[in-house]
Image (cartoon, rainbow, N blue to C red; front, side, top):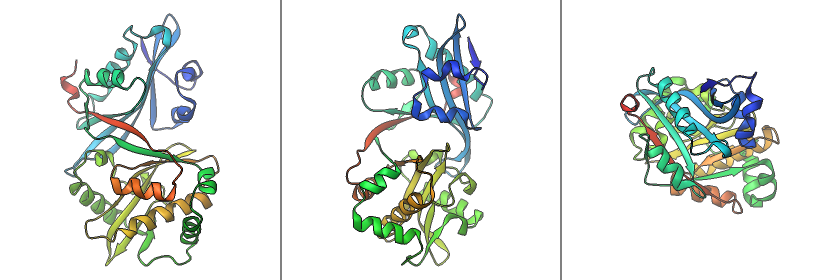
Length: 302
């Protein structure tokens, strides 16, 4: 039996959720479904709903599947299938929806990909590089020259002309910029971006503007109280490539100076230039890779 997991019964399901994402279950936009057998919590599925835009600039509902897990003693008994079917039943009521999942490469990857593929998910051919940083990484691993530059930028010293925080871009201008970047983007990864400026952290997200037009953009999505996600670091085709490095320096400095010590930042480095920039600033940090799956034809899935 699949039930909605609320605060009154969440503790029973916490052993099935990795500690690093347990905070997600407390966010208002995250929902949990639980599978119960003989009054025992045997499975959990966590997902979030948000508004986004697709590659054509049209609105769609994004269903981000954060986690699905079956208790070890109940694997192979259809628990994950029950949970995914329950999610499909919910999403069917939202037209123009897409369900997205990320699977880390490594142990169990092939089995997980086969499971989702058998339920209508299609996977990008490319792998998505991801890097996670902490305040301690900023203290210990940034090149000293880059650290000084990052802090100077964050403090407003020697700030390049045109570098602005997100709150200095009008909502109309921001929506047009996101639509333009999506139209120019050949990858499907960015399709889950929302053009709602308020969904992003205003202190860290930033841009370069020239002649009242945005030329480069770094967006950090607000998630739980101790984590941020960089969902875009990109430039329009005619932008100076050094702008992106300055944006990443600025964001790193703001994070270092203004965010709590326990706040982590996840950098999604979809393009090679983004990955090289992050590896330049954080040379000792490992990059792990995930594959992203999409399910759009939800009505056809039984």
